[in-house]
Length: 150
Image (cartoon, rainbow, N blue to C red; front, side, top):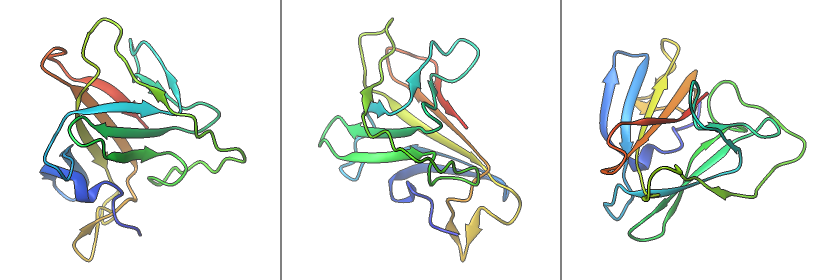
C-alpha cells in the first residue's frame, strides 16, 4: 500500500473510526485557497458531482492562490482501489469555474472511505481508499459543492 497522495497537504484531519477520513487541503505556504484545473468533463452538478471522467480518466490539480504551487489532488489512473488504466493519457488541463460566481478560488475538503484495515499501514494513511469525495467552497459560494465523487 502506498502513502496517501495528498498526505503532506492535509489539515483539520478527522478520522471517523478506521474506515473514513475527512480533511482540508492546505498548501505548504499556509494558504487554503486554490484554483482548480482538471482533465475531465465539467458538468452542471445538478444530481452529480461537477467533474466526471473523460475517456475513462480524471486528474484534478489544485493551484495555490498565494504561491502558485501545484498539487495533484486526484488521479483516477493511480489513486484508490478502482484505478483505471488507459491506453492514451489526456494531459490537457482545463480551468474549473462555477459560472454563477465571480470567484474561481476555493477551499478544498477531501473525504475518503476505506475498507476496514486499509486506511493505515504502519500508522500512515494509505492511498488504497474505496471511495473519494471532494467538496469545494469559498466565501462567495457559502455552501459546499461536490467536485468529485468516485
